[in-house]
Length: 102
Image (cartoon, rainbow, N blue to C red):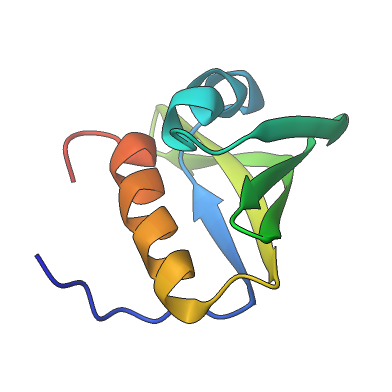
């Protein structure tokens, strides 16, 4: 499979999960890459000679009638990671972070 999606050096996403869920999924999502917790709600993933810094914060839940869905804002910042390596990493990462089977 050839994934041609480009990922910017820095971007932000909203995920439908709690911080505890995110932190539980993170080690498996990064695969063979080394994961370091830099601070509360900050992690660094080494990718080749560069890294990805992740920062997250919980947002108020999305409310739809009586349904309350958790929300998490995540900032992604790649440093010295080639575009092809960013795409390969994010392809695996996104599969682990999807909810409901995509």
